[in-house]
Length: 369
Ligand code: GDP
Image (cartoon, rainbow, N blue to C red; front, side, top):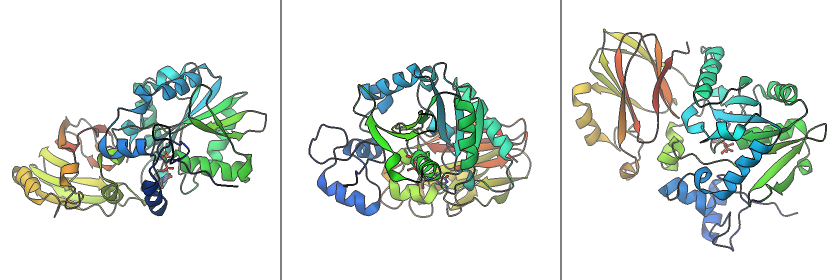
């Protein structure tokens, strides 16, 4: 049996023959991809590195066909999101494609949250965010696909909520959907050959079907690419330094007004107005935070991007989109969220600004503590 190689972006079977076909990868790139473990088809590679094509779901007939099929199906939709990047996890137009189908919202990467953080507050927030996007999940749960936390619970919820339906697992790339599916396969079947690979009718997209007890299927749909994600904004070697990898250790800073904290060179926090306060930063433990005066911050950034302020690595500076500024006044204790990176908890009644590379959202939410 020859093992099929798949693009980790779109799930297509990798092939090196038909340049215009799905999954096409030049031979040299295939070898590189196999070595580094990051195997992308050329199309996803280009999208990831050069933003060459618009989001697949909006332009690609296959994705539309797939989403239409979901709408027409009688299915439970398991919608997987990255709790560190809700906006980056949104599937454009998902609410339309969900139709009347029930939705189970799954917030993945729970293992990264500090223990002190109230899980309940985070699920409430995820649900609110989903509602704003027009999706009304029946239930919201947190899991860690990687650490196998709450996967049993997830499977129980799926059984309860699906009734007599198929299950479609949907999510954009990078939320951890493949990791989750692999855990489910391990727990549910334990047998590799129970997975059948078939096509979505009328498309060239592959699906993975995991049989459920009563003849229904759990269907893994191809990951849909969302460009407004750190993963697509940063070069891969820089992403590795900023995407949280382990349980986050909060760091407290005592700040006076008009002080700035740089998040490497890819984010920035300004404490603009308010008394002397403590703020708590939740970011990847290895991301270097650098404090400076607000007055000098612009100049400091220009001068030190790529040396004191890394990532970007020296030489990658020009690949980082310009930072965009979002200003907020807090009415309650709040988290200023840098999507894909983490957040800073600030007190009520202060004025702050968050900056992130163009395309990556910064938003304010009620504090999770
Ligand atoms: P997909 O594109 O949605 O299929 O995502 P992958 O399963 O390939 O995961 C994307 C990245 O997130 C990989 O680096 C995974 O190791 C990581 N990841 C996935 N699940 C988890 C999780 O539960 N916790 C943590 N910390 N990382 C995860």
